[in-house]
Image (cartoon, rainbow, N blue to C red; front, side):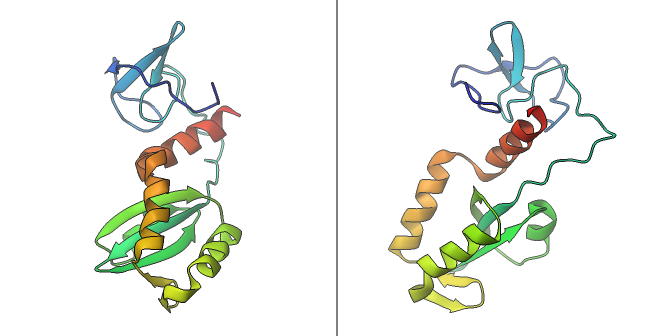
Length: 148
């Protein structure tokens, strides 16, 4: 099993919230309880003296029929500063991935980082969503980075 991945089995309650992400469901992996949300081992605590890992994401947010494709090292902070109706997806990567997506969808660019939500972009977003809910994926990426 890859670091940070959680097997798909029935969740059980954690004795207390996960110290990494705060969620309360667990799965048992061998003799360990693992957070069902982020994959962090229950009972382990992130070292408060170490900086949190930097996880760059390409985000897809929707406002009406437009989608912004941007990147951030701090997605919660970044998304709180942008007017949008819905977070559609995250994918791992920085400026290189963001620029590749801008080129891929250049024919539907409305201006800046905003694109018309057409069938091709919707299909791409659906494929990313098939990997998981954006914030859960982000939590798993952070957990995995801390475990490595």
